[in-house]
Length: 420
Image 1 (tube, rainbow, N blue to C red):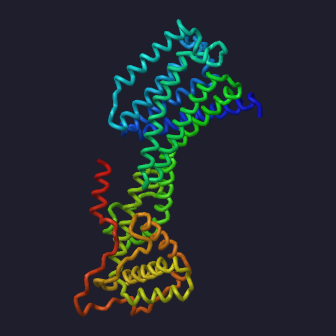
Image 2 (tube, helix red, strand yellow; image 1 turned 180 degrees about the vertical axis):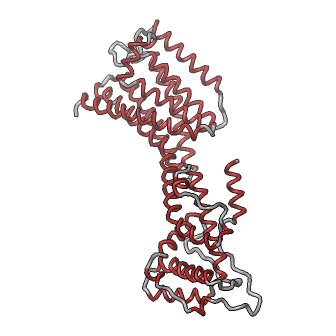
Image 3 (cartoon, rainbow, N blue to C red; image 1 turned 30 degrees about the vertical axis):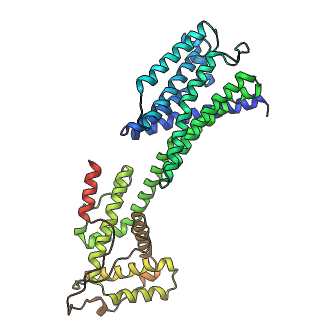
């Protein structure tokens, strides 16, 4: 592949990357409004996006035609580059609680003024780095390259440092490393410019667009990763909400007092914001568990053991046994409630073999909901006498803890805190 082909490929990568980067920035604006740190980070990305955009051939041509200031061989592009470097440095200093906006932007204005003065007096047309008459010792380009490296290198160190400290949150770590990669690519670009200024190899100049394009795509990945993860979480919560809805409807119809709200159209729940869908799923899991706590008083330990023997007799895989057992005794409890069988305090504990977090609760209840439609559960039958709970002859033992999820009052307080 010759230099012209490399330049053409890089120009395409650069153009598409710049467009995607602006789309990613606009998508991140709503989330960044609530955090000053995210605002500054997004502004630093805006600076990089602007620097990439003004280097696009169509944009450069349009600027040179319409702006007098830009006609001095790319001075507008270089001034914007200094501004983007100042935005990046401002974000870095703010992240380490050493923000100095007057110093940073004052130096930015002074640097732009010096570059304009150099371009008009000592080094005319020095903004054209591709011109052969720009000497390697050009103060214009040494100042410009230094201003970019002073902005990007500390930001790379900051992102890598925070990524190393963030070991538990893998998504945050990945996002920081991607942003670090984008700022590193920008640093490499200005290193390539320095190498071209010193040696003037033609193949090095052909790499400019490709390097800028790589910077753009790394920034796109870093900016969009939180949105992708949020969308993935929303899709998972919405899917779980829909899968658990039939079980939730049946249990809350049998035990109405556990439901905080009446059932709503499923589309209204699914098309809400990601946080609302997550809270709705959380409440739904709590209400299903509360209903199971109430219904367990309608079955006896003997019923559960009979259900377990019934499930084992059908040769189900080990992972499907416990959900099927729960589905069986729930059928027995609902039938006992329909027959108006008396309830009694039960020592039956609701165990979640998967753990005690929300995700494990959701996974287990989805298995229970799936097991309700299987042949072994539908075939489970109890003698009529077994569904009648005998009157207790002695005070029953305290019930074992059944679940680690919060109660109705707790979920109400959680929602109130989220809204506030």
